[in-house]
Length: 146
Image (spheres, rainbow, N blue to C red):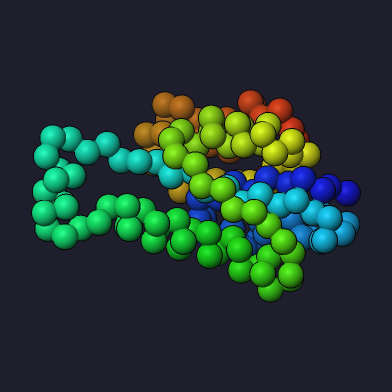
């Protein structure tokens, strides 16, 4: 059915269900090209906050890496258990722009997303949720898993 599938994840509770759906959609797991994408939003820190954190022994890059590993662990477990190869990509910045960019770069035939991930109410009210924006702007078909 599909060979090149993009799986953008935010670590939502249904990440495993999305991965299981993707496995059902591929004909040959050895030929599948699954890209698991996590887009990190870098919080803006003002003034001396980064230096103060550093002075207290807080390594913000290590915290970000641990967060990415936590999010990706949910998504990769199902693929590992089913011996389906995948590639992980981590991008920084606006989720929608980066997801669309990666879908184009990887020539994805399908994007599989959750009904809604982890977004704030203010994001939904002022921008619409990420899933809605992807449905409206993606250049490939988008499958939404509930």
